[in-house]
Length: 390
Image (cartoon, rainbow, N blue to C red; front, side):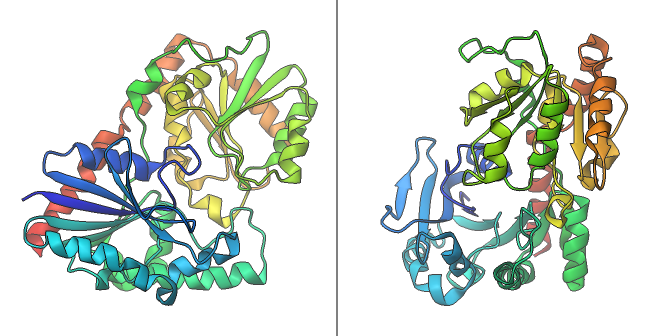
């Protein structure tokens, strides 16, 4: 029987022009022979079309927010504010009853009462973040209220899910601690990489001169990054170029704007997905400069294996979930408060092997074992095992 997959996402498909795990999983499901259609169910602004067919063939179904202010996003987690807006989806799925299997995939803990609108053939929660925590690590009363609302929503989803997959062992432990009754249905599947993409070198993007050592970060520019440390590195090593690639998710914060005033900081902004590899190949060393926060402890960054797939050594901060991949000449990880001298010394050490072909081969070999296709096939294997046990 054909299958309709409904994926609960954080926002519209190209909201920040970045490609996350949920995008790759949607594309993977779309390629499966038994797939009838993919519905990308997401919150969005008012006055936008409820349903649109994207260029990739995926149907985007928007549940409008209470308002367009960031504070009003809490309504995504409280049934009173969204339940009526689910009626058209409920009616649409009712028409498919009996002709297709219909599966619900949560990748974001919004709309926790979706289980009430349809008799789903399966519900799965793919947890990639500590959604209730602040990215910046700063505490406020408003943040506390948001935390309570999201935790309650997530609890409902865990209770109804056939199984839960987490992107890091830290996330799994957090969920098990909060929902011990469901520990036997919680699994860990780390993030992967589209390995083949990072073997290509396109020629139609701006070239960066290589007179200088270039270190860089590629991904969303968000408050979870340690801008202060990056600025100190730029000031101490004016002979280095620091490349940042990705959209500004800080709302032009003062810290980020100050960072860009440094003459050896180069910000490329948001770039198309097919150009990320080229920017990756301009680097000598990849960096993942995350703050020491609870939110970051749960992260398994997409960029780790992407840097390695391009043959680049990596230096990370405050990412305990990546600890098992730390290896000299491949990946160095710092935990806790990181001093600028430590980071610079690590870069100097990495440069000894950064351009060595044998070390590049070693990094690529590790990344090649983490291909998305393999990871998603394993998740689907659990999916089928669960189906036969129901």
